[in-house]
Image (cartoon, rainbow, N blue to C red; front, side, top):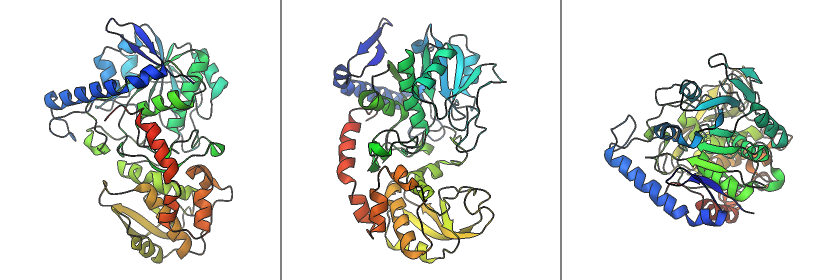
Amino acid sequence: MRAHDTRRDHGGHRMTLSRRSLLATTAAVAATTTAAAAATTGTAQAAPGGHGGRRLRTGFERLVDDGYAPLDGQRVGIVTNPTGITRDVRHIVDVMHADDRVDLTAVFGPEHGFRGTAQAGGSEGRYDDPATGLPVYDTYLKSGQPLADIFTASGVDTVVFDIQDVGARFYTYIWTLFDCMEAARLAGKRFVVLDRPNPVTGRAALGPILHEEFATFVGRQPIAQAHGMTVAELARLFNGEFLTEPVPLETVTMSGWKRSEFYDASGLPWVPPSPNMPTPECALVYSGTCLFEGTNLSEGRGTTRPFELIGAEGIDGSWAAAANAVGLPGVRLREAYFAPTFSKFQGKTVGGVQLHVHDRSAFDPVRTGIALLVTAKRTWDGFAWRPDNWIDKLTGSTQVRTMIDAGADTDEVVGGWEEELAAFRRTRRQYLLYR
């Protein structure tokens, strides 16, 4: 299978690179990106949250700086949500709509909607945006030819993607990205991805790899549970490895971003990407504790600390004690009691744990999530998996569930995916844009 990436030469002409040529130039691109970042470090004005005078610039900021050159002469549609904002918290749709240098003609909304009015598992439908008058199309749970037909009906030439991800395989916006890339290919559209930071760093991929027979909207393709990539890097991976045929792809990278940095180093405002992702701290634990969606315990939805609070009726302090005894790096577990206002155990007081991460660099969210599953099952006789085995879709196979049921400890469960993870890390490396 061949992949290609559309770029421009010094005269402004588009160039199509084969997959082999693209991979051969990856090192050069990375070196250029690194040099640009170094230059930014040395010359930019200090910004809140920045280090040493360096200021991160998002893909959108760099697109504007370039006068929207990649979109010149194109009718543009954008896939975005409330996280598509500028540093001064204006929505990029409002900014682009008011700028004569770009012809923005349509907006495509994912899960929760373009303006973010829908809860989990919902969207806003088709409507005209009151603020701009632009038509808004619903992409949620649409893929393949039906989604391609929406792109065709919208009349756009280029589809742009700009959504803040949180770094977990089961966070659905990256599969909206995948589906939109495939649909753009079917509809004969260009695809441009504007990059934003991975808020939990891009240091390493962690956790089990999805097995293809467990593919759903919480995992379309075999990537790690915590992928450690930005959306632009994922787009390159999808184009090179997973799409039936590649889409003409252009990525607008960030400058000034380091893979080792957490979101607060970016100086960017945090907008909840979804209703139950209120803070970067929530994103930090999410790739591990979201696994409790596959159990009968509350994952903290309906509280002010979703995915940081986990519990159920009948649990006492023995669970926190057992989890702390595992010796998990970077995190302490506190015995906690809470009453969710919606979702599981609505209005009931439940017992459980709260995660307190004290060393982000040492913290491993996936190992922590597995340890919590193992100890919850051992200390609470009411523990049960969801009857539909949702845990298998979240982890990507039956392996985690069956090993825990067989009495495996945390190290044994984590060791079960190391070979597959190592293979994914090798594949992942060639698509990274920031070194």
